[in-house]
Image (tube, rainbow, N blue to C red; front, top):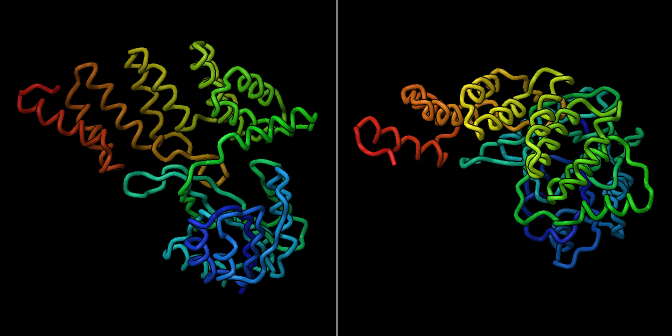
Length: 362
């Protein structure tokens, strides 16, 4: 059986650390906690699970803090979690089985990271992350923000999701502030950092600057294909917000030069034509989303709804707008099979019931 050191960096995680470690302690052989400046009693929670608690002054560098935690590990493998991560009982059993059967020559284990959920708690946004790496084999995090361990060696992918269940809002301007500081210092941005800088700018409504950075990223030859595809969507969003609709559409279409369409891009194209009441074009693109390529194991961001619920509910509205109520209702029922508690599905259901009874659909 492989031995694993759980290595975590924490700061003011009193609300969630107990929840995380209660489940995780049964899965690992050692827990390393690195506190970067808590003031809420996080240390007392950590002491219930380990005496290996270290202090590291925060330097606006996530990779440095995580690598410090790895340095303290004594087991065969290192694993990282955030304090608001959760491993369900079902997945804990799978984890233990994996741990017991892990081939000795494994260098890295990739697991799904689920970060958004629907009305029933089912994941709607996920991507594979490097979660477990062999200790003392030169695996280090890179990147002051959105840190990553570059994949190498023998890599295994296992469908044992880690759920990111946040209880407090994200840290506001922190990531953007770090990127701006890097820019002011003249720090070199590799392609990945450039991509995430553009995303942060877009998320903070800095659309013109985001456009500049994303276009710079897309000119790089070494950018990861999945990031390039996603960057076209981010760039399109910036153009929409800036009122440049033709450039937004062109940006979405540019994704096709990197690979066959993803469901996310198809849904964006569907929305583009829907918003302009060009329903036949919208219908075409929403239908493409059902069969689009879904990169579930590559590490790409996957919005699950873009391969089922969103095209179904959107086709319902499109067909209703062009007077094909029977088709519209069929697609609404399809949407309900994906998300039976969706407010949109349930409202549409009432709408179609009234329509069939000959009453007002308003």
